[in-house]
Amino acid sequence: MNHPSPLVSIVTPCLNRGHMIEEAIESVLQQNYPHVEHIIVDGGSTDNTLAILKKYPHLKVLSEPDKNLYDGLNKGIRLAKGNIIGHLNSDDRFTPHCFKEIVHAFETAPECDSVCGGALIFETQQKTTTIIQRYESEKLKSLSLDNITMGMPIINARFFRKSVYEKIGLYDIRYKIAADREFLLRAYLALIKTHTINSTIYQYRQHPSSLTFNTIESKLPDLHPEYLDIIRRYHDDLNMPHEIRIACRNWHNWMAGYAVKQSFRQGSVQQAFKMIAKGIKFDIYFLPRYMHQLLKHRKTNGK
Image (cartoon, rainbow, N blue to C red):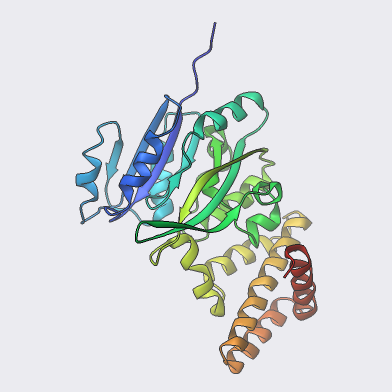
Protein backbone atom coordinates (compact mmCIF):
# COMPACT_ATOMS: atom_id res chain seq x y z
CA MET A 1 0.00 0.00 0.00
CA ASN A 2 1.33 3.41 -0.94
CA HIS A 3 1.67 5.78 1.99
CA PRO A 4 0.18 9.26 1.55
CA SER A 5 2.56 11.96 0.46
CA PRO A 6 3.40 14.43 3.24
CA LEU A 7 1.85 17.88 3.28
CA VAL A 8 4.20 20.73 2.38
CA SER A 9 3.44 24.12 3.93
CA ILE A 10 4.70 27.23 2.15
CA VAL A 11 4.72 30.46 4.15
CA THR A 12 4.78 33.83 2.37
CA PRO A 13 4.93 37.05 4.40
CA CYS A 14 4.01 40.13 2.39
CA LEU A 15 3.25 43.83 2.55
CA ASN A 16 2.14 45.89 -0.46
CA ARG A 17 3.43 43.44 -3.08
CA GLY A 18 0.48 43.60 -5.46
CA HIS A 19 2.80 44.03 -8.43
CA MET A 20 4.82 40.89 -7.64
CA ILE A 21 2.97 38.44 -5.41
CA GLU A 22 0.97 36.81 -8.19
CA GLU A 23 4.12 35.40 -9.74
CA ALA A 24 5.11 33.95 -6.36
CA ILE A 25 1.69 32.29 -5.98
CA GLU A 26 1.79 30.88 -9.50
CA SER A 27 5.24 29.38 -8.86
CA VAL A 28 3.68 27.25 -6.12
CA LEU A 29 0.75 26.26 -8.32
CA GLN A 30 3.19 25.14 -11.03
CA GLN A 31 4.68 22.41 -8.86
CA ASN A 32 4.17 18.76 -9.73
CA TYR A 33 3.22 17.95 -6.16
CA PRO A 34 -0.43 17.86 -5.04
CA HIS A 35 -0.24 18.13 -1.25
CA VAL A 36 0.60 21.76 -0.59
CA GLU A 37 -0.87 24.46 1.62
CA HIS A 38 0.16 28.03 0.84
CA ILE A 39 -0.13 30.43 3.76
CA ILE A 40 0.03 34.16 3.04
CA VAL A 41 0.68 36.38 6.06
CA ASP A 42 -0.14 39.93 5.02
CA GLY A 43 1.11 42.73 7.23
CA GLY A 44 -1.78 45.06 6.41
CA SER A 45 -1.32 45.94 2.75
CA THR A 46 -2.89 49.13 1.45
CA ASP A 47 -2.35 48.46 -2.25
CA ASN A 48 -4.11 45.81 -4.36
CA THR A 49 -2.41 42.83 -2.66
CA LEU A 50 -5.53 41.61 -0.85
CA ALA A 51 -7.64 41.90 -4.01
CA ILE A 52 -5.14 39.70 -5.84
CA LEU A 53 -5.13 37.15 -3.02
CA LYS A 54 -8.94 36.83 -3.29
CA LYS A 55 -8.45 35.52 -6.84
CA TYR A 56 -6.86 32.39 -5.34
CA PRO A 57 -9.37 30.65 -3.02
CA HIS A 58 -6.91 27.87 -2.17
CA LEU A 59 -4.72 30.30 -0.21
CA LYS A 60 -4.83 30.52 3.57
CA VAL A 61 -4.62 34.26 4.25
CA LEU A 62 -3.96 36.02 7.53
CA SER A 63 -3.99 39.82 7.28
CA GLU A 64 -3.07 41.90 10.31
CA PRO A 65 -0.27 44.25 11.35
CA ASP A 66 3.06 42.61 12.12
CA LYS A 67 6.41 43.81 13.41
CA ASN A 68 8.55 42.72 10.46
CA LEU A 69 9.11 40.01 7.86
CA TYR A 70 10.15 37.43 10.46
CA ASP A 71 7.15 38.14 12.66
CA GLY A 72 5.03 37.30 9.62
CA LEU A 73 7.02 34.13 8.99
CA ASN A 74 6.58 33.03 12.60
CA LYS A 75 2.81 33.51 12.36
CA GLY A 76 2.69 31.39 9.23
CA ILE A 77 4.86 28.64 10.73
CA ARG A 78 2.54 28.46 13.74
CA LEU A 79 -0.44 28.03 11.38
CA ALA A 80 1.30 25.44 9.20
CA LYS A 81 -0.13 21.92 9.25
CA GLY A 82 2.54 20.34 7.06
CA ASN A 83 5.46 18.34 8.38
CA ILE A 84 7.68 20.02 5.78
CA ILE A 85 7.86 23.83 5.73
CA GLY A 86 9.33 26.20 3.16
CA HIS A 87 9.51 29.98 2.90
CA LEU A 88 8.66 31.99 -0.20
CA ASN A 89 9.20 35.74 -0.30
CA SER A 90 6.43 37.69 -2.00
CA ASP A 91 8.84 39.00 -4.65
CA ASP A 92 10.52 35.67 -5.43
CA ARG A 93 9.55 32.35 -6.97
CA PHE A 94 10.22 28.63 -6.78
CA THR A 95 11.70 26.79 -9.71
CA PRO A 96 8.96 24.75 -11.46
CA HIS A 97 8.56 21.11 -10.43
CA CYS A 98 10.97 21.11 -7.48
CA PHE A 99 8.66 20.09 -4.61
CA LYS A 100 8.51 16.44 -5.61
CA GLU A 101 12.31 16.21 -5.49
CA ILE A 102 12.42 17.97 -2.12
CA VAL A 103 9.86 15.58 -0.61
CA HIS A 104 11.68 12.60 -2.13
CA ALA A 105 14.89 13.75 -0.46
CA PHE A 106 13.17 13.91 2.93
CA GLU A 107 11.67 10.45 2.43
CA THR A 108 14.90 8.81 1.30
CA ALA A 109 16.95 10.46 4.05
CA PRO A 110 14.72 10.13 7.12
CA GLU A 111 17.58 11.13 9.40
CA CYS A 112 17.81 14.61 7.85
CA ASP A 113 16.09 17.62 9.37
CA SER A 114 16.44 19.91 6.36
CA VAL A 115 16.79 19.74 2.59
CA CYS A 116 18.67 22.42 0.70
CA GLY A 117 18.82 22.97 -3.04
CA GLY A 118 20.50 25.62 -5.13
CA ALA A 119 19.39 29.21 -5.54
CA LEU A 120 19.91 32.02 -7.99
CA ILE A 121 19.42 35.77 -8.12
CA PHE A 122 17.61 37.16 -11.15
CA GLU A 123 16.58 40.56 -12.40
CA THR A 124 13.76 41.43 -14.77
CA GLN A 125 13.84 44.56 -16.93
CA GLN A 126 11.44 45.19 -19.79
CA LYS A 127 10.29 41.55 -19.70
CA THR A 128 13.88 40.32 -20.05
CA THR A 129 15.18 38.09 -17.25
CA THR A 130 18.88 38.14 -16.42
CA ILE A 131 20.56 35.76 -13.97
CA ILE A 132 22.84 37.79 -11.69
CA GLN A 133 24.35 35.12 -9.46
CA ARG A 134 24.07 31.40 -8.79
CA TYR A 135 24.47 29.53 -5.50
CA GLU A 136 24.57 25.90 -6.56
CA SER A 137 27.72 24.21 -5.25
CA GLU A 138 27.64 21.63 -2.46
CA LYS A 139 29.77 23.95 -0.33
CA LEU A 140 27.29 26.82 -0.61
CA LYS A 141 24.32 24.60 0.26
CA SER A 142 25.85 23.10 3.40
CA LEU A 143 24.92 24.35 6.85
CA SER A 144 28.44 25.55 7.58
CA LEU A 145 29.51 28.38 9.85
CA ASP A 146 31.11 30.18 6.90
CA ASN A 147 27.81 30.16 4.99
CA ILE A 148 25.79 31.19 8.03
CA THR A 149 28.01 34.11 8.98
CA MET A 150 30.06 35.47 6.08
CA GLY A 151 28.36 33.76 3.15
CA MET A 152 24.88 33.69 1.66
CA PRO A 153 22.70 31.49 3.91
CA ILE A 154 20.03 31.03 1.16
CA ILE A 155 17.40 30.38 3.84
CA ASN A 156 14.61 30.20 1.24
CA ALA A 157 16.31 27.30 -0.53
CA ARG A 158 16.16 25.36 2.75
CA PHE A 159 13.09 23.33 3.64
CA PHE A 160 12.77 22.19 7.26
CA ARG A 161 10.80 19.58 9.08
CA LYS A 162 8.30 21.18 11.43
CA SER A 163 10.09 19.42 14.27
CA VAL A 164 13.09 21.75 13.73
CA TYR A 165 11.05 24.77 14.81
CA GLU A 166 9.67 22.80 17.75
CA LYS A 167 13.22 21.96 18.77
CA ILE A 168 15.07 25.27 18.35
CA GLY A 169 12.27 27.85 18.24
CA LEU A 170 11.14 30.37 15.63
CA TYR A 171 12.88 33.45 14.20
CA ASP A 172 14.04 36.10 16.64
CA ILE A 173 11.96 39.13 15.63
CA ARG A 174 14.40 41.55 17.24
CA TYR A 175 16.26 41.24 13.96
CA LYS A 176 14.62 42.69 10.85
CA ILE A 177 17.45 41.62 8.54
CA ALA A 178 19.66 39.08 10.29
CA ALA A 179 17.08 36.76 11.90
CA ASP A 180 17.79 34.07 9.29
CA ARG A 181 21.48 33.94 10.22
CA GLU A 182 20.71 33.84 13.94
CA PHE A 183 18.17 31.04 13.35
CA LEU A 184 20.73 29.03 11.38
CA LEU A 185 23.32 29.50 14.12
CA ARG A 186 20.84 27.86 16.50
CA ALA A 187 20.25 25.13 13.94
CA TYR A 188 24.00 24.52 13.71
CA LEU A 189 24.29 24.34 17.50
CA ALA A 190 21.39 21.86 17.58
CA LEU A 191 23.23 19.64 15.06
CA ILE A 192 20.45 19.94 12.50
CA LYS A 193 21.26 17.58 9.64
CA THR A 194 20.98 18.95 6.10
CA HIS A 195 20.59 16.87 2.95
CA THR A 196 21.48 18.65 -0.29
CA ILE A 197 19.99 18.12 -3.74
CA ASN A 198 21.50 19.04 -7.09
CA SER A 199 18.58 21.07 -8.42
CA THR A 200 18.19 24.83 -8.21
CA ILE A 201 14.93 25.26 -6.34
CA TYR A 202 14.71 28.95 -5.45
CA GLN A 203 14.90 32.18 -7.44
CA TYR A 204 15.55 35.45 -5.61
CA ARG A 205 14.44 38.59 -7.42
CA GLN A 206 16.82 41.55 -7.25
CA HIS A 207 15.11 44.94 -7.31
CA PRO A 208 15.49 48.33 -5.56
CA SER A 209 13.24 47.47 -2.59
CA SER A 210 14.54 43.93 -2.09
CA LEU A 211 15.33 43.34 1.58
CA THR A 212 17.64 40.39 1.01
CA PHE A 213 20.16 41.86 -1.37
CA ASN A 214 20.01 45.63 -1.05
CA THR A 215 20.26 46.26 2.68
CA ILE A 216 23.43 44.67 3.95
CA GLU A 217 26.15 46.32 1.90
CA SER A 218 24.56 49.77 2.22
CA LYS A 219 24.86 49.43 6.01
CA LEU A 220 28.36 47.97 6.18
CA PRO A 221 30.31 51.23 6.59
CA ASP A 222 28.80 51.45 10.07
CA LEU A 223 28.65 47.67 10.61
CA HIS A 224 24.99 46.84 10.75
CA PRO A 225 23.94 46.82 14.44
CA GLU A 226 21.94 43.60 14.03
CA TYR A 227 25.04 41.67 12.95
CA LEU A 228 27.08 43.24 15.74
CA ASP A 229 24.44 42.25 18.29
CA ILE A 230 24.45 38.62 17.12
CA ILE A 231 28.25 38.53 16.98
CA ARG A 232 28.56 39.86 20.51
CA ARG A 233 25.86 37.56 21.88
CA TYR A 234 27.54 34.45 20.56
CA HIS A 235 31.18 35.53 20.76
CA ASP A 236 31.02 36.87 24.32
CA ASP A 237 29.16 33.84 25.68
CA LEU A 238 31.95 31.79 27.21
CA ASN A 239 29.67 28.74 27.23
CA MET A 240 29.51 28.74 23.43
CA PRO A 241 31.59 26.13 21.58
CA HIS A 242 34.99 27.47 20.58
CA GLU A 243 34.21 27.08 16.87
CA ILE A 244 31.15 29.34 17.21
CA ARG A 245 33.14 32.06 18.96
CA ILE A 246 35.91 31.88 16.35
CA ALA A 247 33.35 32.04 13.53
CA CYS A 248 31.82 35.16 15.07
CA ARG A 249 35.24 36.77 15.42
CA ASN A 250 35.98 36.01 11.77
CA TRP A 251 32.55 37.35 10.81
CA HIS A 252 33.23 40.62 12.60
CA ASN A 253 36.69 40.96 11.04
CA TRP A 254 35.32 40.26 7.57
CA MET A 255 32.61 42.89 7.92
CA ALA A 256 34.97 45.45 9.42
CA GLY A 257 37.56 44.80 6.73
CA TYR A 258 34.99 45.23 3.99
CA ALA A 259 33.84 48.49 5.57
CA VAL A 260 37.44 49.77 5.71
CA LYS A 261 38.01 48.84 2.07
CA GLN A 262 34.81 50.54 0.94
CA SER A 263 35.62 53.68 2.94
CA PHE A 264 39.02 53.99 1.28
CA ARG A 265 37.46 53.42 -2.15
CA GLN A 266 35.00 56.24 -1.49
CA GLY A 267 37.76 58.55 -0.32
CA SER A 268 36.55 58.55 3.29
CA VAL A 269 39.94 58.17 4.94
CA GLN A 270 38.72 59.34 8.33
CA GLN A 271 35.89 56.81 8.25
CA ALA A 272 38.34 54.07 7.23
CA PHE A 273 40.64 54.72 10.18
CA LYS A 274 37.61 54.89 12.46
CA MET A 275 36.59 51.40 11.31
CA ILE A 276 40.17 50.12 11.74
CA ALA A 277 40.13 51.36 15.33
CA LYS A 278 36.82 49.62 15.96
CA GLY A 279 38.13 46.41 14.43
CA ILE A 280 41.25 46.43 16.62
CA LYS A 281 39.17 47.17 19.71
CA PHE A 282 37.17 43.98 19.05
CA ASP A 283 40.20 41.90 18.01
CA ILE A 284 43.74 43.20 18.45
CA TYR A 285 44.84 41.04 15.50
CA PHE A 286 42.01 42.32 13.29
CA LEU A 287 44.16 43.58 10.39
CA PRO A 288 46.42 40.53 9.87
CA ARG A 289 43.50 38.16 10.32
CA TYR A 290 41.40 40.09 7.83
CA MET A 291 44.25 40.09 5.31
CA HIS A 292 44.55 36.32 5.73
CA GLN A 293 40.79 35.95 5.16
CA LEU A 294 40.98 38.16 2.08
CA LEU A 295 43.87 36.19 0.54
CA LYS A 296 42.07 32.92 1.25
CA HIS A 297 38.87 34.28 -0.31
CA ARG A 298 40.69 35.43 -3.45
CA LYS A 299 42.49 32.12 -3.79
CA THR A 300 39.23 30.18 -3.43
CA ASN A 301 37.25 32.41 -5.80
CA GLY A 302 40.04 33.22 -8.24
CA LYS A 303 39.86 36.94 -7.69
